[in-house]
Image (cartoon, rainbow, N blue to C red; front, side, top):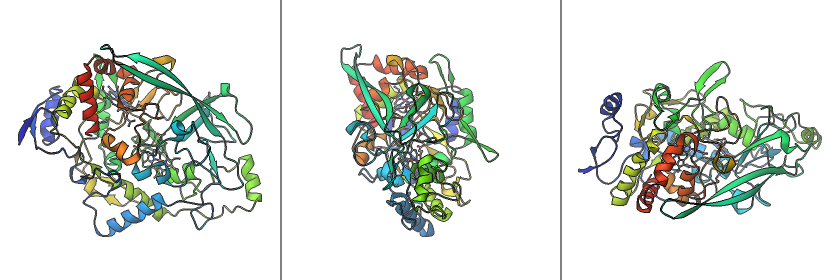
Length: 474
Ligand code: HEC
Ligand code: HEC
C-alpha cells in the first residue's frame, strides 16, 4: 500500500457518507497500488477491443449460457424474413450490435460519409418532432433511414459542418465543429424545415449497464436534492418516466429518458422487430406500408420472443466493467487532482452505490449479484443544462424527452471512456459525436458546466494534458 492522493475511493463507503454529511469534497486515503476497481467483482481486466463485451466473473452455470445466447441475439444480423428476425420494413440498424459494435459505440458515418451515408447504414438515431412537440403521422418518432428491399427509407440525414477556431489563454488553439442537420429524400410528404426539430444521437457505450439499473434511486434523488452548488451554478434534476401506471426514475439514454435497458423498444423502434411489448410494426398506418402489405409482407407473427429479449437484457446487465489503467502513472495521478480542481466530479460523480436487491430483468429474474456494490461510474445520472449559447447554439437540440428540456442532458458516465478508441476505433464524443476528441468534448460544455469548463480552459497545457491522461485511464 502506498499513499495516493485521491478522492475517497469507495473502499470505505460508510466513511464516505459521513464525510459527505460534513460537506467535505476531497479526502485523501490509501488505495491499493496497481488499479482501481470500477465495479467491484464485476470489474474485468481486458484492454482489447473486447473490453466492454466481456462477462462479469460472477456469472456461472445457466446464467453463463443465457449470457451467450443474449450476446448472440444482440449481434445477430437480422433480415426481413420472419425466420431471420423480421427486420424492417423500415429500420435504423440491423442488430443491436450494428450500432453498439463490441457493446460500444459504432463509428458514426456522420463524419466519414456526411450523415446517413451513401452505402451501409448510419448507426445513429435521428429523432424528429414538430416544433410543437407532436410526432408526424407518416414518420413517427425516429427517422428510419434504412429499409428492406423494395421499400423506401423514410428519409436520409445530411449534415453541414461549421468550423471555428478558439484559443486557450496560453495560446494553444482548438477547433469546434458545429453540425447543422437537414433531412432529404423524405419518402412521403416532405416536412418543411420550419416545422421540424431533429435531434441526432450516436450510440452510447454499454459500460456498466447492469450497475446503472441497480442504482439506488434514493441516492440519485438525494444528489438531485443536494447537488446545488450555487458557487458553480450546478444543480442536477431527475427525469421520471410514467408508463403503464408506474412512475420510475429515468437513468438510461442521453436525456435519462428510459427507466430500463430499452430491449423491447430497441427491437421495435430501431429495427422494426415486433415483440410482445410492441406488437405493431413501427410503420403501421404509414402510407408506404399499406402498399408494403400489398406486396405480400406478412406481419402476423411476433419477430422476437419475450424469452429471447430477456436473454438480451441479461447479457447487457451482466457485462463487466473495464478496470482503470495506469493508475500509478504520475501524470494520471496529477490529472485526477485536476479533475477535482476543475469540479468535473460535481456532475461526473465518482462513487455511487447499488441497491441491496440488485437488478431485475424483463420477466422478473433477479440478479442479486448486482446488489450492494460500490461503483465508480463518473456520473450522477442527472440532467443538467448544458448551454444554449456557444457559437449560437450550445448543446441545445430543442428536443424534449419526458421532463428533459432541449438544453438538458444526462451526465454521460465516463467509466471505460479511455478504451473507446481501442473498442470502436474512433474518438467521437457527446450525444451526436460532434466532439472529435476529449478536449473538444470538454470545450463544448456550457450552461451549468461553464464554470467547470473555464477552470479547465485556464489550466496550463501540462495540467490539461494530465487531465486528459486521467480520462484515458478510466
Ligand atoms: C440504429 C442504431 C441502434 C440500434 C440498432 C440499437 N441502438 Fe441502442 N442506442 C443507440 C443510440 C443512438 C443510443 C442513444 C439514444 C439516446 O440517448 O437517445 C442508444 C442507447 C442505448 C442504451 C442506453 C445506454 C445508456 O448508457 O444509457 C441501451 C441500453 C441500448 N441502446 C440498448 C440497445 C439494444 C438492447 C438494442 C437492440 C435491441 C439496441 N440498443 C439497438 C443506437 C442503436
Ligand atoms: C454541469 C455538469 C457537468 C460538469 C461540471 C462537467 N460535465 Fe462532462 N458532461 C456533462 C453532460 C451532461 C455530458 C453529456 C453532454 C452531451 O452528450 O451532449 C457530459 C459529457 C462529457 C464527456 C463526453 C462523454 C462521451 O462519452 O461522449 C466528457 C469527456 C466529459 N463530459 C468530461 C468532463 C470533464 C473533464 C469535466 C470537467 C472539466 C466535465 N465533464 C464537467 C455534464 C458535466
